[in-house]
Image (cartoon, rainbow, N blue to C red; front, side, top):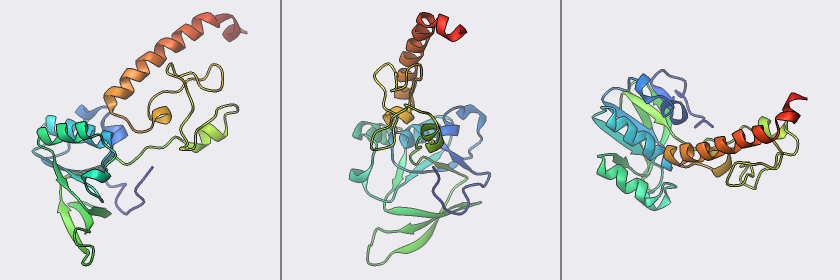
Length: 199
């Protein structure tokens, strides 16, 4: 899912789903902007900070109470030195930063430039609609997430689901922990159904 604003394809703009997969391969520079306020945003911000970025700032359109991230995640981000700019709506990503609408004063909204070397976009990653619509017997809930039990069994036998496509946005740690449980369930399924898989 994208922000649908100009500049998302620039070389200094990255999506958290890609960055968190292999943060060591990215050269972010000193100053980083994080767009979004889910748990994954806090993950990306803290990872960037721990990777050597001197200043990491979360840009968010609302206040702390509006954030999807848990209070624990937000507090831990603050403890790590993550900064927050609230009531800021991104309208364009530029080579030298992010153009924002400052909505602190609702009666006097103004445009401003937040200067940074890199922008990481951490808005919700939704399941690919074509995967669900083209796979029979694979059911989703009202939020578009795949229905699965704690071991990843979906409504279609032999098809497993894990991570954000099942739970919605969670932390990377939670996603990895769930993936390990599902991987064990897949291994068990393959052992018990080896005859069917050979047919």
